[in-house]
Length: 390
Ligand SMILES: *Cc1c(COP(=O)(O)O)cnc(C)c1O
Image 1 (cartoon, rainbow, N blue to C red):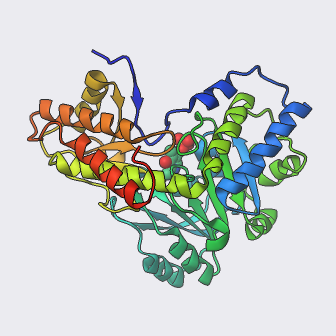
Image 2: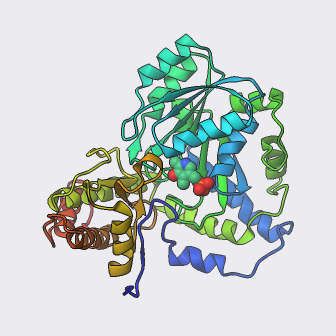
Image 3: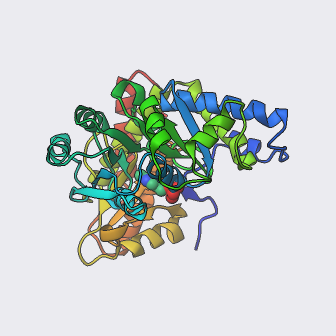
């Protein structure tokens, strides 16, 4: 049986606010007309606000990986030495892209579930000069949020540019590219930015733009310079996903209306609530039991229980779509996202579904306590922060 109301609780795509859906349902307009130019100009300005940068943010019609690829194609020439810092499935993607472009990749691999140590990054850079450091802010496959401020400081000290994959966390956790000296931040529309999949972004610092001017890797659709030359006139070089841009315009307006800090606080509190619920049910966390883990909570699946079956049962019995493990964590964890247009009621529904699925799989979980504990933790934290509980 499938419940009639669905809960999309993956760390991307995420649920869409009705006002964003309404904007996307408007008639499609000509992308070279004045009406669209007005929308695009506003979106580009709002993106700067969400990226916390006074520099440029390039917009692509692509999934997030397109923006990742652009940060390799534009910054590097074949054979360039780069450092990839990875601690999960998405960090591995940086290494795959960099190798595809023929770069000389030094790969600092951190065990999945751990956060990269900035001093280990400094050590690698001392041992071998790299032009660019590629790292991941929120490693969505594990729930770990890395200290990219410290990594960027080590990279800068070693004369390297820093590129950060913030696809799942931009708009959900604190990130200050200008203040922290991060050259490129890439993100996508479908996670904390409350818009369907299909748009990707890259913020480009002055130093990154200068590096792009001399980099010789082939690029056409993903060329930053071509995009930026169009964007100064509020145009795009190619036909953009017009309806998604209209939706994003409204989503960013919603996000910025309360201030980004409020959005960061929402995700932090939902993460705290979700962890409290998981613990109360007697389940074990895989992601860190720490406020930094504000994007996705990963729950360990005990030996002898099939994680994929838990995810399937949550969807079929309770209408909750959660995510399973990826790569080496396949079948071993269940992930519940709490970014974007998600509230404590959604988290409570996910926890109820999780308990039911584990109980039916024969695990010794206590029923009915997870959601209650999550609400209690959320209300207590919200009261301390001086805001209403829901
Ligand atoms: C979702 C995600 C991606 C991949 O983005 P796509 O839009 O699927 O290309 C990359 N990195 C991280 C950290 C993500 O969470």
